[in-house]
Image (tube, rainbow, N blue to C red; front, side, top):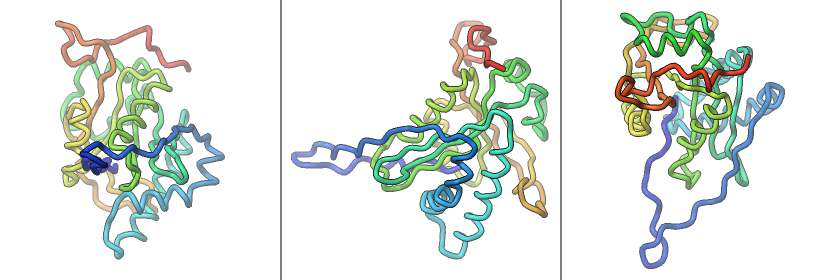
Amino acid sequence: MTAADRREPRPGPEGTATPVQALRLRRLNRWQAETLREDLADLSVESARTGAGRRYRGREAFLRRLTSAIRRPGFALLIAEGTAFAGCAYGFPVPREGTWWSGFHGSLPPGVEQLTASGHVFAIIEIMVHPHSGDEDLARRLQRRLLGDHYASLGATLVDPADGQARDAFLSWGWQDIGAVRRPSDPAARQPSAPVLLRALVLPLGTRSTSQPNGLAHENRTQRPD
């Protein structure tokens, strides 16, 4: 999971912020995602800003994750573009059987378990934003649109605890850390390595109330279409 670059906009004349380039959000279907997979992998490398020695491994890992996600029922990918790709977010609906939460330490919060069983949860597998996109709110726009398009009452994602910047960004957007999940470090790899412990984050989109201050109440009106 790649967090958005949260730098402040560069000041323009007389201290005003420089206008950001107009970016449009566009859905890609499975065929389009497959066709553009190499371009999306380039975006992943440029967004990660890792050392040259790790770029090839990171690119290959991204392609494996994307290929695995494309095969999932309900897969959806949203691209942000201007003159070039500036950002991307993709994911799929969490299966009602709860397999997404396999390896969760302890018991799931009741609201999360109920929303999962009723098909209200959408997993965001990856969010990428190019460091030169010029849009400070792009990552949040991508996640909000992706979840809204799928009538989700709850967003879900997994974050490496070593990536403190990504975790802090999600928490600042209203996501909640609900515990740890043990998963293979790269489930799509031919020979997955030892399991790693990831933080499970959720974004409640339901209405908060006195009885449900975290917004995890079940809402029939947001039932995801089958």
